[in-house]
Length: 514
Image 1 (cartoon, rainbow, N blue to C red):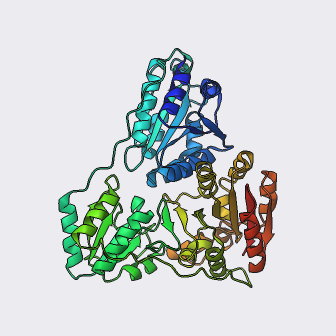
Image 2 (tube, helix red, strand yellow):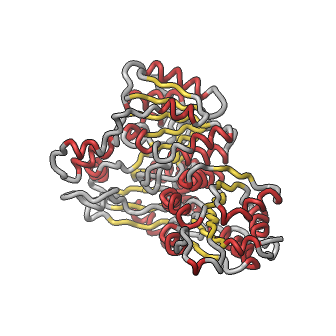
Image 3 (cartoon, rainbow, N blue to C red):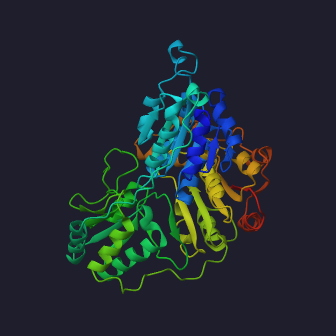
């Protein structure tokens, strides 16, 4: 058994049974090993950003790592933007990156790079296997690292000769470690703040945004009078009717400052103190009032649910009814296509147990509120801010949850980064409906141009933000990738097409012209 087969058997034995791949020559022995080992599903992506983004979506929904297979340093570099996003989302992921044979590196062949140095800013664990006998043990260590709470990126670099030489056979993977229990001092401190009578915010993220966590946080807020909010971006939020509603810190600095005005205390449940996405002239980086104090109830690697249970007991909130949302969904909107109307129709039409992947950027900024009364669903956001995550994230979520409809809310500018994901969706028959919002511009950057005080833009500047001349034909692009679709220009047509897509198995794209 060579090193590659030893590694694949270790991955499968350790519960890693999906590999999103874009291989090259140095990975061919790993590819060949996939034929000899049962239990590993292989999903091909035509660009490494699709591969790594899909592994992120899979990890968020399965709560276990997928593997990626990437071709040397340049292949990994193509996937780093979505590895960055996954790292910020604390998604478990095992990257297998091929490299030149150990004896070939000194010749500085065209694809030679320092892969370890490139990987380290985006990974919590990085190692190059020194020989074939070490590969399986290194793979087991990578899985263990990826599963370390709250979830980590592990990158294992596999020189070609460590794959083809004789390996050790599979190695058993250590059981996943449990998250650390929060201290009684942290619970008591948070309780004191909640009893102080001063304005207090309970700021949650991570597993605290699952239904049980939100129930607990909602009870605590209802009992103590604290406000309850989530970070601006979150890996996975369970929301809709029958669940405790939670709003997010706004993206726009002025809005966020206004929302948080008057706060004296912020209790952090896996979250950080709210900060602006970017620096702007004459605007604050920290969004809370200058005298507001942060109190850590639980760090990201700690047991967020256990922390909320302990805090609820400490403040006597366990018997307080959870303030769930039970209002009826809105009726679908009609008339002209606007962001507001789209949000209303989404709230009306999102099906039960759907997975919503949000990269709608400017168009979707107001979608969160009107979907609070939608059927129960999961909402996945871009945690790292690097665009091009939406369609790959939806692809991975659909692989993880084949029995659930996935809805991808995608902007046209972001979509062009990784539209190859549509091909993978078609090839795998994945049940993903992509709503492609076509405003033919990088609309968010038009606002940012003003926010940073760049003056009155001229034609050169505006051309850098314009996606017209020629206009993108998203229905044609989808069809070329094997995905059917249609274009809509009214809300009536949107409602019809979206309903058709939801009732049609497999991938479908609706281009929404704004």
